[in-house]
Structure formats: structure tokens, C-alpha cells
Length: 259
Image (cartoon, rainbow, N blue to C red; front, side):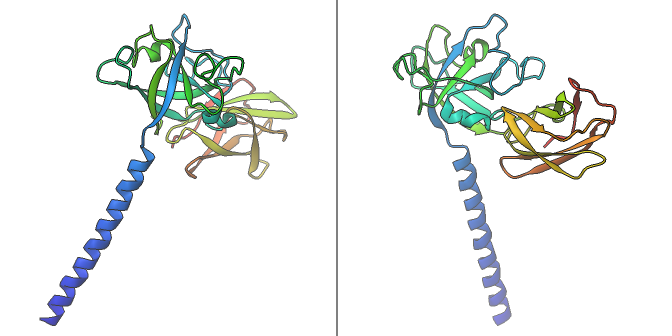
């Protein structure tokens, strides 16, 4: 009888512990997904995209598959380029005239910097003045959540996981004494924290952020197959071995693994 009681008590304790863990886990998820307030405008472009040579260095956004679902971020969100590649879900709220019914949402990738304009009021024209949280969207993406007649709308936003097709892409550029790689199509967090490169005749070499998602090294790596180690903001690290063959050339793009 005593053994049965002890077993019952043990099961009860284990159940309570597991229940508490689940509750903590659910709290953490809900906190991560909490909606925050900001504002949004759009940039008029004939091809439905925002500018193609943005501050993240991605170049033609359609070629790298970000396309119309891209946005320029105000300084407090852009964080000197570290958030390039991050994904946000946006929805228009609290404006009966401009927000589309049902508050549909759109998922965007951070691809550019929205510069401040301190010659204009932060409430009219200086949308990206510090410390405002603001998104400059493509016209096509803006039209998915609000009426294009609006000049600025209140929005709610939250960080979401980036859903990508295919692996990470590494575009080579530079010269024999200056080597640079642009990394795109990053899934999961989307935000790169650190990059290392390894040739067949070297160990792992930490790369420095040049600007946006361009990472650089001054080591001559020509004639060596290249491997990359990419760490994202959550701390997860992914290693793609021998992504580029020994005869790789500048301006070529190679595909690695995906998070």
C-alpha cells in the first residue's frame, strides 16, 4: 500500500513539473510573437519593388527572390545593418479608412535602410527619424494590407521565421587581396551574427561585416575550395563544406545548406 502511494505521489510530482515546463514554454513563445506598434509607408516603383541597390547590399531583389516582399527599416530597427535578412509580419490596424477589412498580414524581409529626415517633423515626413519604428514597403506589398491612397498607416509587427526555398547563397566578389561574400536566402532567424570561411589550405577564418550582409576577409583564397560557417542571431550554426570549387571566380554564386 505504501509503495503504491509513493508511486502515485512520484507520478503527481513529475506531472506538475512537466506541466510547469509546458506553461513556461508557451509563455516564451507568446512573448516572442508579441505584436509591437509602428507605422508604414510605401515607395512607388514601376516594377512593384523597392529600390534594388539598398543598404543591405542585396542588389536586384527579384533575382534573390525577395522581390516585392521587402522593406526599408528605420534606424532603430535597422540596427546598422545587422537585421538585414530578418523577416517581419505586418498588419494595418486602427484606421477605418485606410486599413483593409479583416486586417490581413504580409511577411516582409528587411533589405534596406530608411534614412531619417530631420528637416521634417517625425509626425509628417520624418517617418524614419529616431526613435520611430517605421517600415518603408514596396507599393505592391503595402496594397496587401492597406489602401494605396494612404500616405502613412499605423501597423503592428512581429519577428517571424523566414521561410526560404533552397539553401543559403554565397556570391563572391573582390580581388586577390580583398575577398568578400554576400550571403542571401537565409532561413529561420534570417539575421546573421557571424561568418567564418575555410579554404583547403587554411583553418577557419573569421570574416568581418563590411556592410549589410557583405562579409570580408583579406586572406587570398583563390584556387581553394571554400567552406562556410554561418551563425544566426539565435546562436545556431550551420556549416556548408566545399560550397565553392577550387576554380571559383568572382561574381559567381554558390548554394549551401539551409537552416
